[in-house]
Image (cartoon, rainbow, N blue to C red; front, top):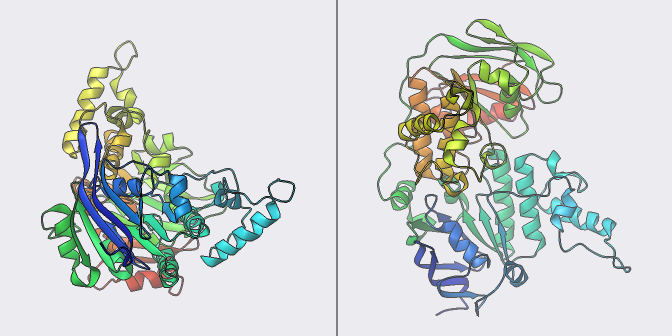
Length: 503
């Protein structure tokens, strides 16, 4: 065994949970200064292996070697001491504390009296934020940051540990194209310094941009490790799902009908100004732009989550007064939020409760009580219709894969019978196979005459699914583009960065 060649060697790793064999003889080697990508569908075993590596789970069998030494029976704190750091997919910042306290939580610099040295903490935080080119005051509360900037703070925290190996679990899932390139710049810098990166992602295009090697997982096994230049995207997808995927974006032509939603000169006090567009029956209307452009805020305002200062919203030719989400629902709108963990799912509740929460008024008996049988019947119809994989309706939603959690949230809104469905980053943090299923579902809804408004930071997704695309830059609409074979990612980026403006 050549311990001097690789920083990390995981040999024949197995992990068993009651009734489940999560990892089955997995091997993984990561070299010094190497970017090693891990890909696979949700539930394939990637995150479980990484939790074993950082000491969160003890392995059932197998050996782990790090920097030439065999390690065993260690905690996450000891893993950090050894030089292993992990950026988790699901962020859990201390929201009402500043960036600098989040960066140094549990290891705050102390002065000679044993008290926290806030000035030193500020200075150290400023240096690490400058290293990743994040232009934020270290005293800024985390709650005031976007999800993308929270992710960058997590990256800064990992760097601050001077880690030899950084595990990045879906680090770009909340980032736009521009921010993603900034992340890649940081990764290349770390690699040049000799730091190794294990990079977990469902965005296969970025794997080809930054990875040296890729390991593919399926059903708890390592089904292959190759140098990235020896593989094509189709080969990786086939290895991941065990079958070919002829078309990633299964968009089918739908009959575009009359205008359902019309927005006229809509403005918010802070986030956007004079936004106007219309969306028709059966249309998928994409909204593109960089984080901070105001995309999410526009659809939140239309749905009633934010107050407008001016402008009008017309639905089916009638002026609508929407001042709350309840007004939005009453006007036959549904809203799939960007961060399903924070603002979507009720993690410990069952699938049935998560679907039925905004719909209980449909299931009241004559005496005003919820009819549980009717709830079960109604939920089962949607579980079957959109093929949600769950052992039962009572299964806690937190135990489902990301793709199935997203389907449950889609079922929630479909049960309300919406004519207009807002989808904010509908495939964020889910695997390539589940993405294709969500795309099929979106296309099916459009074919049924639903009016779909989709915000996405993934330009291939916007181009692959949308009939028309509105592009925003710094709160302003810069382009309204008909999707065609001539439309490219470069064109959209020109509008998104403000270098091209049609309005």
